[in-house]
Image (cartoon, rainbow, N blue to C red; front, side, top):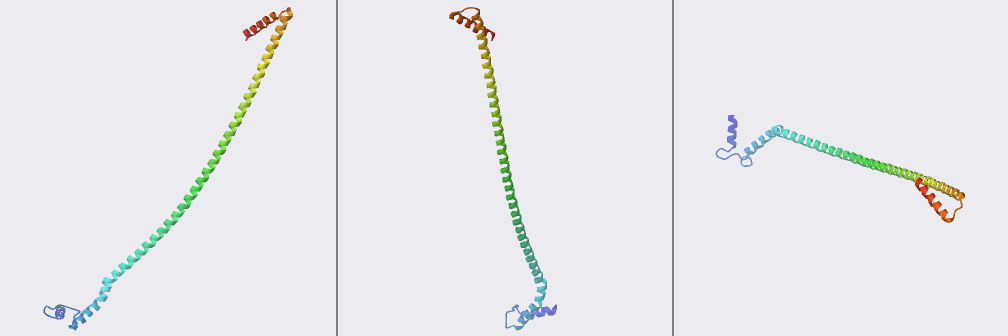
Length: 183
């Protein structure tokens, strides 16, 4: 260690001067500076620069992998979005088709109900007309029977005796009164 210290002391120029590698007047200093630098470069390269370079290369590789993964994720997301939009479009089309079919079925069913109601109403009106005609026929028949009965009664009374117009009126009034009491 002594020789090294002595060498450093001689390089420093002795008293109070200090080591100045750029000072060309002391040519030895420049030589030793270059020698130390050349000896330390491989060591620095091996010990410091190697791991730093590896770390930087590893960082670059991680960055590239992260970029590639992000690009792939973006691509996958775009594909998923496209598939989702296609599925959504298809679902909307199916929903619209189902709504159109349901609307068509509802309209057809509504038309069936209206047609059925019209047919039923026509049957009811026809039945009511038939019932009214039957009742009219019964009423006319009853009136005819009544008229025949009144006429027969009136004729039998007239034939029993000779009547005047005053008697005819009285006789008709009696017959009407008798009929009213019966009904």
